[in-house]
Length: 87
Image: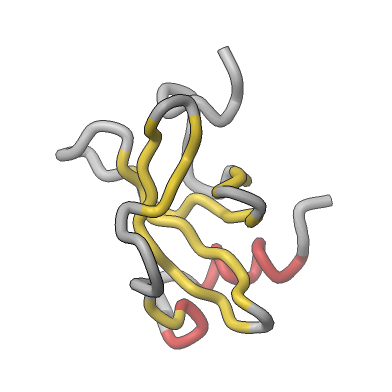
């Protein structure tokens, strides 16, 4: 089983959503395979929901739908991980 599979994912893990690197912030307990992530769009940290469909992570909503994670105290730790980089 791969690390990015929904059964193995946990907060602070890195995943790919399309070609974007993202950091997992929250695992929703009430919905199967749905998580909250932060990712960079240009230089802005964005938080958005994603889900696991057909063997890959995708955003729940098409088009821009996220918030500015830099403005959220709750997401500060995840934004720091994101900005520090994956490697």
